[in-house]
Image 1 (tube, one colour):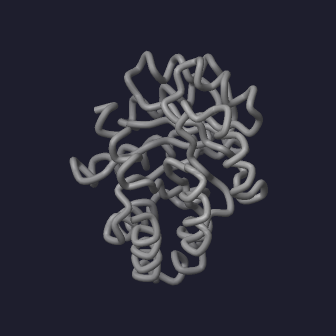
Image 2 (cartoon, one colour; image 1 turned 180 degrees about the vertical axis):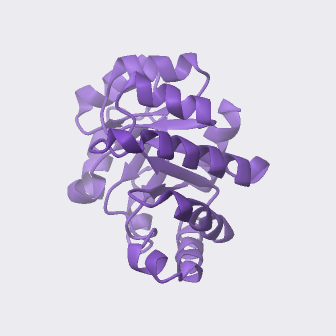
Image 3 (tube, helix red, strand yellow; image 1 turned 90 degrees about the vertical axis):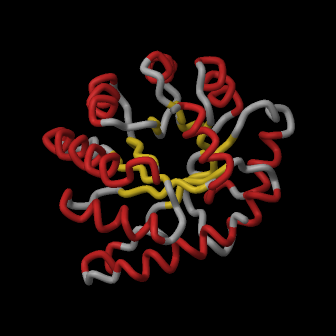
Length: 215
């Protein structure tokens, strides 16, 4: 399964990020995203609301069941082993964090899951890679720009980098051109206004534009 997830990231290049959404809205969002050609969905933990962790795990389980062999469910903003284990028990296939925590990376690998920690500096990127990260998420890449990714990849070309933060269907090509292996896309795609008004067709339409942009 790990190799299937890694292959999907390398081939599809897109992970949709669902953050702060009510549990009952997760499946319609997941279906809309998959209809637009994005096969990977990340459901994030809300660190400010520990009481919501169980609901996050249920949402991950629901997405995994709904996708079956046609998509991949992951957990995002995983900061603790408690959250990691909740996600793993719910069927998460990859674990994404905003930070570099070698203990979380190693535990993720021990559980047979794909590890995608966040980093910004060269030291963090190397620490993540050495701990066993499958990909390193440069975050927030939109604030740093494609020039930053190009510069950090020059000495660290052995590391597979994902770009997250400020990535749109309009600028994604600039990051592909400097070697990004893939991307996490959230607010631009999972538009709260569209969701609140039931316009899941607009999410599908934009997902298709992202999919076309990375081909």
